[in-house]
Length: 159
Image 1 (cartoon, rainbow, N blue to C red):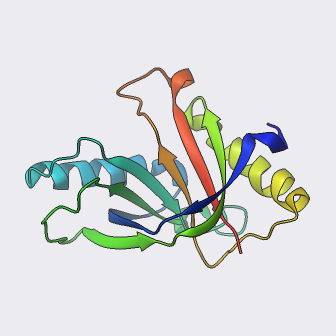
Image 2 (cartoon, helix red, strand yellow):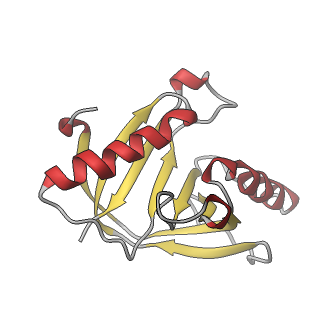
């Protein structure tokens, strides 16, 4: 990865429906499954939706079994659906973010995040906003494409 791979963007706040997850970040797929079942049972239209993985803790400082995350969906039109357990409505803050496009298997996301935080951030002249969570926006899914063709945007909130 190169510094030029990172783009500085200004995002609008994002309203989401989400299911919380506690445990290894690699197991967040279980929360996405729960979210999909919940949406399906309510016949919520998801065409044009964006899937979002939200990560609240630093995996280098928090034990894997205690890592907090949310599996979320951003719907193009706010559905008239009441969020009930285990689904809640949450909002990601807008504002300044650094974005890195990762192309390839989800197994390689940890290496991309490590580079983003350990290499790009200290050399960028920017400061991370650790009060806001980092997140991933999934541009496609393993159901749609082969692992090498997966495209994931990684977002790091900035001060």
